[in-house]
Structures are given as structure tokens and as C-alpha cells.
Length: 314
Image (cartoon, rainbow, N blue to C red; front, side, top):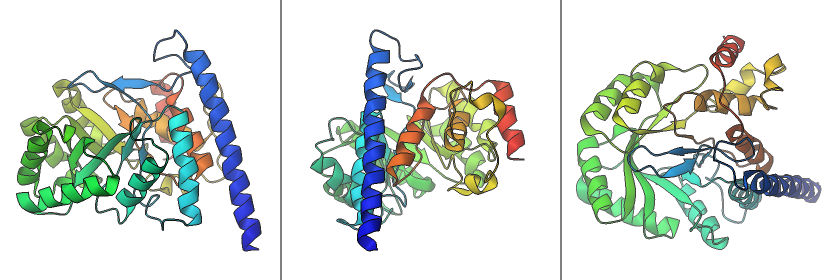
């Protein structure tokens, strides 16, 4: 029985990978000589502080990369990463407090020689004091098998003043290109807005979804005015949104908009706010990775389409 399940899992992964590779080839053909906003290419958006462009669909590692090395889940993650990079993705967010996620990510990226393509974001997380932060970051680099990262964030505002100063110190040393702050709950939005106004980090990572739209009030307008990139977590509300639309058909307009799944609709909702730079859905399933990437194709949602999704989840 177990061997049959493993075979089914392998065949499913192989099918998803084949589809993703074909999808990537089509992207390259469609993208030849075209701008980054054409329907055939994964959309790119600029980081305001530098103008560097990154793909709008990234990926998270919380939960999905907290697996045993050599397990069936670990093998599936190899395909997840192949699909992600073949489809034009680069941005991967992790943290030292996501169990062994940094170890798994580092091992998989090294195994597939993907580091030159990867845009890695990690965090100073759950530590207090400058030396503890430095020690954690040193361990993070070892776990990720790299000598620097693209983005270093202060996780959930912990020991903010000290850790943000350290992140900026590490930036000056060339160990990170950008610094940021994060949170994942709406109650922290007002505090985050005050911090963003005072500190002006390169990035802010915050929760936002079709049912949790508090970031629209202060954070998004402020970040847009100050030129701060926005990374979105919890666009699926940790999967709870899918339970709310179980057995519900997609709105009638989605087919014409090129949307074929609720996941794509939820991701496009987040991306359709002009303040948002990138969204980072997490998955350990190859077919879901291929599906998520499709949300980065085609135009943003209109205001009427956004309103339709809000009404569908009301």
C-alpha cells in the first residue's frame, strides 16, 4: 500500500513538473521581446529603495519546509523548487525559528545549485541583544549554506531597536542587501505603521487577504508614500479561506480574467493593491506551486472584481 501511495505521489509530482516546465517554455516564448507586464510572463515589481525588480509570486517556508531530510515530503519539495524556479520565481522567505526550514531550504538549494537564482529573505527571530542576534545570523548563514542573504527582517518586532540596528550593520557589511520588519496579525498594524514612519525600512512584511484588509487603512498608503516594499504573508489565512469557499464556484468573471482556481483569485486579490510588491504563499505540493505561479500572470483585478471576491467571502 505504501509503495502504491509513493508511486502515485511520484507520478503526480512528475506530471506537475512536466506541466510547469512546459508552462515555463511558453512563458519564455511569450516574453521574448516583451515587457514585464505581458500576460505570458510572471509579473515583476520594483523594490522602491533601489528599483530592483522581483517576481510578484514568491514562496514561504513556514510549515511546508519543516520536514525530515530524505522523507517523502522532502522529495516533493525538490519538485516544488524546480517548478518555482522554472516558472520564474525567485523570492523565498524563511526564518531560523521555523524549526528546520532553513536547513531544508539550504540543503535543497545547494543540491540543485540554485543559489544564484534564489532571492532569500530570512529573519532575526526570537532573540534579545546584539550578540545573540549576530550569533543567530551566523547560524542562519551556515544553515542556508550561503555567505549572505537578500533580505534580513526583524521578526514580529521582537527586540526591534537592537535587532534593526544590527540588520543595518549587517547590511553595511554586505551580508544583506535589504532590511525589513515583519508581523502576521492585524492588531499590530498601527504599531507597524508608526515604526515604518520612524524607521523607513526597505521592506515591510505583513498579513493581508480578502477577509483581513486592515493594512489598507494606514500601512499601505504610508508604505507607498515612503517608498517601502510590501511582502504579503497569510494571503490564504493559513488555508482557512479554502474551507470557506468549499463547493463554491468561482465568480463568473474569473474565466475571462484567466483565473482557474480560488488560490489564484486570493493571490491576485493581494497583488491588486498597488502598494504590494510580492506575496509569499507556502506549499509543499508541486501541483499547488504550479497553480500559485499562475496568479502572477495577466492583469491585476479591477475594483469591481476585488469587490466580488470580498462579497463571495462575506
